[in-house]
Image 1 (cartoon, helix red, strand yellow):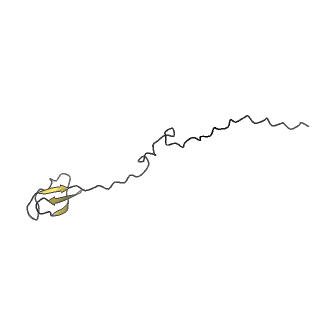
Image 2 (cartoon, one colour; image 1 turned 90 degrees about the vertical axis):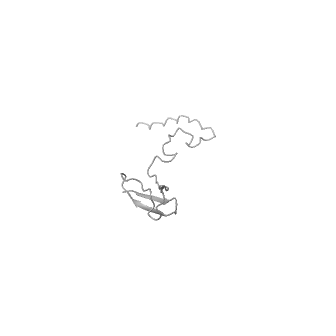
Image 3 (cartoon, helix red, strand yellow; image 1 turned 90 degrees about the horizontal axis):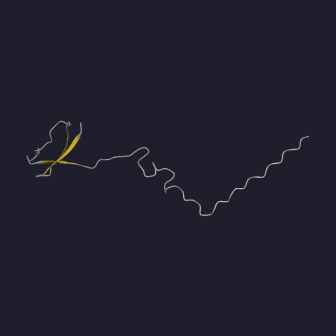
Length: 88
């Protein structure tokens, strides 16, 4: 069962109560018989696993890839053929 927080608009009395989803919201303060309102707080969320950060789903062709070197690459020349051992 979820816990709901209520606060009285008249006297400021605040309390939490366990209620089913099918239960009606409370409307009368148990302290002063004033009007109640639901209080909504922040929800703690933690994202675990991959896919939650900008770098998780990027392909290698985007701007986040390492910058290319500004010096030109040397052309590779074919290696000289190794001489075969003399038959003998």
